[in-house]
Image 1 (cartoon, rainbow, N blue to C red):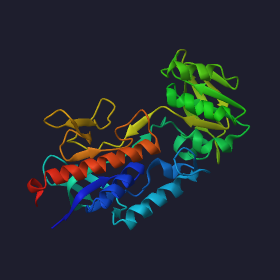
Image 2 (cartoon, rainbow, N blue to C red):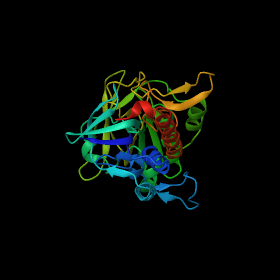
Image 3 (cartoon, rainbow, N blue to C red):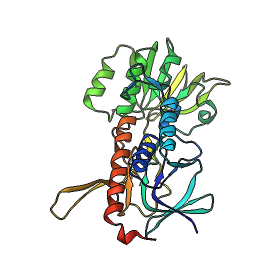
Image 4 (cartoon, helix red, strand yellow):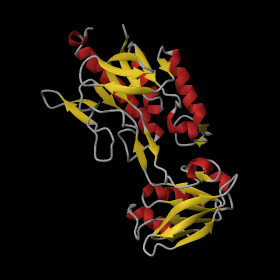
Length: 321
């Protein structure tokens, strides 16, 4: 007989662990499937200064470890393994972990999203050696240096503005002749004296031995290629939600889980974190491509846990196994 939990939580970032904390405090039997790289993107972050309650800031891994310890103290079971398959088409919901079956009366999807990389030669070898996706995390290491930011959306603009405070110069490389970022963000970038823009350019490969030394840029109009030296490259071309293992949940055109509000017979708001499958809820970056903040993910984890708890109570008779 496989293990049956009241709430199965897939993911262990701020959304997943917060959901676990709230679910455990509600008296539910909870399993968090954390994965082999638990903790989400905050595990790759240094100083976090925008999470309330820490006047001097806190290191990302330290914050996540505190969340994990809190969840475990409250009785949340945490499994540091990857799940390979899910079945949300019928009750009880099923998750396969290392070829073993785990079942849940309800599920919270909190698998997050990962950065999209350029996937060009040299990138994999030089990640963390001059190539980054987080200016807030790594800008300090490029103080007084020349850096490149790749992208044309708000994220790329934000990266460039953060870096301009410490770097000697920032060059934005964009493959088109105009940005898709908001007008306000574009204006901030274009009026910053330390930021310059290279239109219609794309990185075709990196070069460097132990550390990044430069890139090869290809002109998307003329197809000409040139070699450019730089101390660092920050890739900001978007995120990919971790939803490839979900085959029976509705996703949007970008691959994010579609979150929908559920209302009662009187039209009053009932659940705010529902998915296309009743009993399966969602929280965090796996459904959020706009805010992507630790605090919003944690808040959504709270909502999802409360929704799951209420849903379980409401359907208690039908969920007996």
